[in-house]
Each structure stands twice: as C-alpha cells, then as structure tokens.
Image (cartoon, rainbow, N blue to C red; front, side):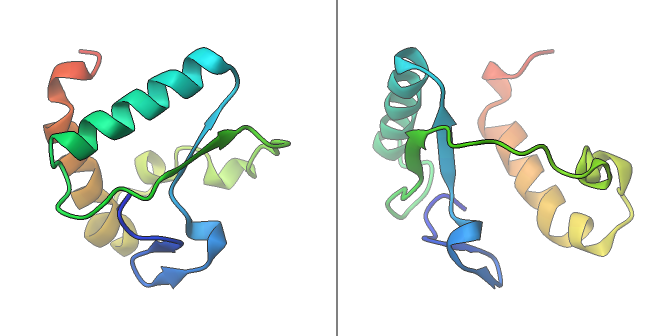
Length: 99
C-alpha cells in the first residue's frame, strides 16, 4: 500500500517503506509523473507516500526469494496478502500490462 509510511500490513519499519529507485533522470521523471498521476486520479483514497530516490548499492536477494509468489502459490501469506494486491494491481493497470 503506497499510502502507508514504513509499513506493509502488520510489518513496520523503514525496511518496509514504499520506494521507487531510479538509475537516471528519465526514470526519475517517469516515476514522479506516474506517482502524481495516480494521486490526481485518486487510485488510493489517501496521499501516496512512496519515496522516489536514486538507486543505492544493490545486493541480489538469495535464490529462494526469487519469484517467491510464483513459486509458492499455496503459501497462506501469498494467498491472503500478496494475491489480493497483485489482483488489484492487474485490474488497475490492465491497459498498461504486456499481453
């Protein structure tokens, strides 16, 4: 939820913040444009607090984290928390997703 500061559901802390990292000016401009567009269109009722920042040093996640949702469809967290969010995302951005 991009309207919750430093939080994802019951998980709280800066490691759970909503953030878009960019590599260059074009990416930053697009991120800021779409964040404002979503805010203007009231996709969420509350203010979007997603941070937009330059990409920091990046560390690839451990292999078992890769495609976790896809590889663990029966996991209760995936079913009760992730799937509704993915479904909402797909519905909201259906016209922008690759077919």
